[in-house]
Length: 306
Ligand code: C5P
Image: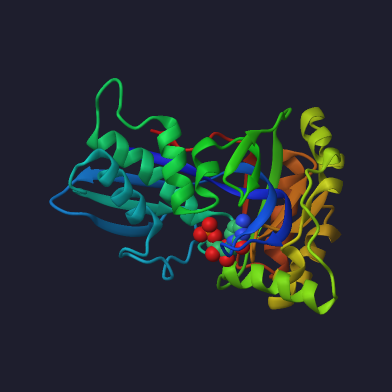
């Protein structure tokens, strides 16, 4: 059983106040792109996991846990528990999504593992676990996991797990510049709070950008570029100042929009067209500002059985 799940870029990430549970209230406009991880689940005596880089991707997989700290393993355990079966599967994760890159690679693996294990251990025509059940289990695993199940473009509220699809028109072309070493998501959120405290600012209540929704619905790439906004960009840049040069290089080469993806350190560049994405990717690659450069388009579907 093999399932693919996509990376995401946040078109808007409005970070609101810190809640009592340690999370922030968000408006998180997720956009799934054609950079995908693959999880294969096969029957085995016990639960085990292996991680490899996809043949065409230059993903550094060293940081990925191969024990209970791996989100895909936790996903498999949750599914087994809900189905009342033993978690007997070997999971093989093939990564093309940067690790700790701000593109929700771990969440994609968790989403793919949820679907793969649910199918492997329950092949009834009318499965016990519904799509809503998997979304609920996804939210237990992480704020971004439900989106990796649904894909497309969606507005997430709460901690990002309560999703509503966004209306979009056409396809958008992206270039992603990865960086050496990841950034820790909790550390970037903490830096966001710290920067606000230092400026004496109170976190605003997050609101969906109507300019962004209109740009998506009309397929207006220039308006989309202008509406991109990520509250985690300033803290990510504070922690990793070198990313400023990466963003500037993309802008210098005509990127319609340039922003840090999620909590970074991957930078996302919106291109005017597929052809422009090729030119932009070549320019970024040649400039030496990125560890690797990948092209992708969106929106694409969420976790898909192949
Ligand atoms: O939900 P997930 O495990 O992916 O979140 C990782 C971390 O990101 C959390 O522990 C928290 O520090 C931060 N986070 C947050 N507010 C959110 C989502 C994540 O502060 N809405």
